[in-house]
Length: 434
Image (cartoon, rainbow, N blue to C red; front, side):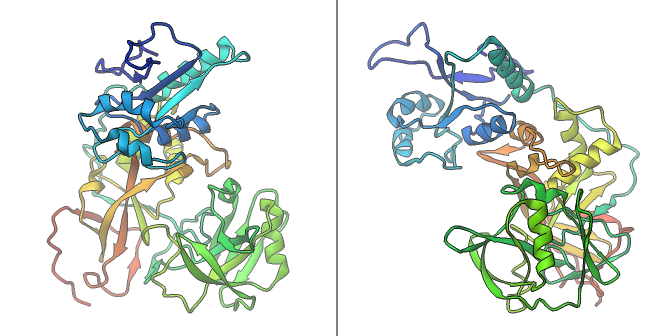
């Protein structure tokens, strides 16, 4: 590990060897190695991020302060001249996602423990994973010359929160909560206290295999292995009970369906007792079921560059890129003569006659590692994002949008054939005719 280097010669790991009080470092270590991972620019990969990546790859390690804030402070202070590292560690708690302070100094470390049942094969597998996953290769540039005018490459609607999306072939309406029928329904379950909560893929990865579509005035739901599919007319009233659910840190009201066969279908497929519900009409349409914003946009050039940076990725093919696209669960993917991550610098996005305000970059969690075709949990693309798209202890890919009706033309509709324009300054275009 000590000999591993990034493409620019900088070390990949920093170690925290055992050191007696007031003494020099111990020359020979025991079977415990405490360390952190460094990027090519010498910034630290957050221990919590690294832990998530390694767990997805099947490696069990410890991360955090190891109930030893004083011992860690002795080592972690070397990352900064800030003398307050020890006090920050003293109030840090195990399991916290904030693993770096405001200046990028780690508030914890990683620890490998080798025991009597560890084998050389284990050690070699571990080292191979570290080299393959955390060593930065040289910067990759994508050739964007001679590409077409930026356009909307795909549009995806996700009717049931955290289930698979579908791509409409016709123009699609915009409503106050986002795209029409996007994340309108949810699956809810109850905990041991009887409180209702909304299911998601982080809890139940198999939700990725449920495919809802809107067709002929119906919500049609299918899943592999299920002998029947559900056809629910959009005009059907939810006549079941109205319940309170926990949703993104707040209480929301949902209206359940009364037909038992609907709930039995989902319960049978997922293996957990759950109910299909729809956001109650009493809730404001602005309180949509999206995590942070009504829309999520990604750039095909950014996706292509990321695909090249993933060590295990196949050479670029259209199908490979589309598989990676589904992991990010975006509403819009744009393509054309755009540089990778040009979307990060935009203030406004114009899609045909519709304008959208950019709310900020989308923070990513380990849910992007759930393969949307198999529901398997993989180490990528979260691992590669931790190398190339990290700011402090947060990973970013794509941008959040909200519709700007005051700038857009009626009717509020998105056409798949529309051209795209990224507007980088803060000056909004003139208000168009309504």
